[in-house]
Amino acid sequence: MGFFKRNGGTPFARMDSLLYSPLCLLLGAFLAVITAAAP
Image (cartoon, rainbow, N blue to C red; front, side):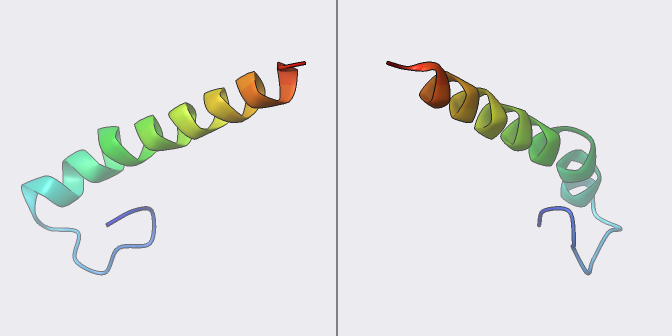
């Protein structure tokens, strides 16, 4: 799972690369920006 997966031939691995990992990365970045902007 994630960006450095060993088995990339399954349907889950394709969806992980296209959707799940980038979504988690964006959510993490969004939360970091929100946390940094908080007073």
